[in-house]
Image (cartoon, rainbow over all chains, first blue to last red; front, top):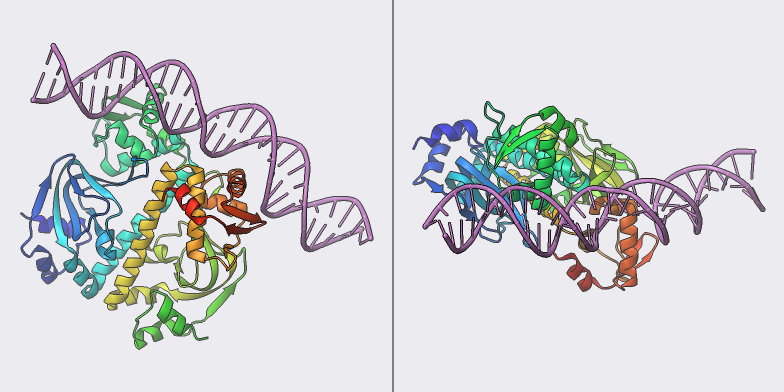
Length: 225
Length: 225
DNA sequence: CGGGAGATTGACTGATCTCAACCCGGGTGG
DNA sequence: CCACCCGGGTTGAGATCAGTCAATCTCCCG
C-alpha cells in the first residue's frame, strides 16, 4: 500500500506537499484489472483520473465501421481519463487492459481543487497535456503522409523506446497483430505481410508475439523519423 | 487599442482580474501580419503566446517529403504557440497567415506566472489544451479510417461551422485547393476531382475559391460524422 | 477431440497517388 | 499593347499501395 513513493516519484503528483498527498489518499485504494477488461468506454461519464501503478492500458477510438484506432498505450506512471475529467465531457475514447493492471483512482473534484490551489501541480498537468498534444500532432502527420511500411517501422521503434527490450532485444510488450494494425492504422493482413518482409530483410525476428529487434538503425531509417 | 474588452470576452483570458489584466498589458501592443507571413516555424524557440485578435492562421507540420499537414486553422480568440511555451520545447509546427491578421503577444513568463497564481486561469488553459487534444484524437481516427471523400465532406462541414457562410451559404474562408488538400491529408488533384464530383452531385457550387454549401445534410451524411 | 481466436497466405480490387500536359488570369517588363 | 511568366487549377492516363475476401493453419483450452 505504499503507492505514495511511486506517485511522488514517477507521476504528475510528484513534488506534492503532505497536505495535498493526504487529499489524494483520503479513503482511497488501488484496484486491479485483468487483461481484456474495460476501464471505461467511449461515451461514459468519467469521474476522475486513473493513475496506472502497474500494467499496460490501450486507449483507442472505435471508428464508424467498427475498426479501432489506438491513440496511445499507457503504462505505469501515466494517467488515463484526464481529458474528460478536466473538460467534464463524456469520454471520447475507450480504455482496455492489455496487461494485467493496477490503477489508482483520484476523484475529479480532488484534481480540480489541486489545480486551483497548487500552481506547480497545474503546471505539471498542463505540461502533460501539451506533451500528448505534441505526440498527437506528430502521429497525425505520420498517418496522413507516411506509407504503412514507414509507420510500422516507426511503431516498432517507439515500442522499443517506451517498453524496452530484454537482453535478447525482444520487445517487452505483447501485442496481437490486430492491436499492432490498430496502432499503425492499417489492416491486420498488411501488418502480417510487412512483419514478414521485415523478417526476410533481417530487420526483426519473430516467434509468435515475440518480436526481436535485430537491426534498429535500419528500422529507424525505414521509418523516416 | 481596446483589446481588453475582446480578451476578456472571447479568450482564455476571460474573467481575469484587474491586476492580472495589467500584467498582460504591461508595455505591450498588438502586431499586424500579412497573408503569407510566417509567425514562427518548426524548430523555432517560442517565447510566449500569440493571441489572435483578427485574421486566420494556419498551423501545420511539414512532413518528410515536404508536404504540409494542416493541424488546425486558428481564428480570433484562439492562441497559437502555447504548447511550446508551456513545455519549453522548440515549436513542432509552423504557423502562417492565411488572412491578414493582428496578433497580441503575451510573454511566456507572464503566462506561467498566471498559471501558478491564478487557479481559474490554469483551469481555462487546461481545458483549452484538452479540447485540442480531443480534436486531435478525432482527426487522427478520421485520417486513419475514413476515405478521402468522407474526410473532404467533413472538412467542408467543419469549415462552415468554424468560419460560417454568408446569406448565400458561401464559406467565409478562402483556401487554395492545396490548403484544402493539406487539411484533408490528400493530394491536390484528389481534392479537385472530389470537389467537382460534389458539384455534379449538387452538394456544393464552385466559383474559384468560393465554395457554396448547397446540400449540407447530404455532406454530413457523406462524412459519416 | 472439438471449438475458437489469432495468424498466415493468396488472389483480386480499387481508391488514391503520381506524372505530365494544359488552361487561365493577372501582373510585368520590353 | 503584347508576349511572357507564374501561381494556381484541371484533366487524363497509368501505376501501385494497401484493403477486402476467403481459405487454411496453428495453437491453446476446456
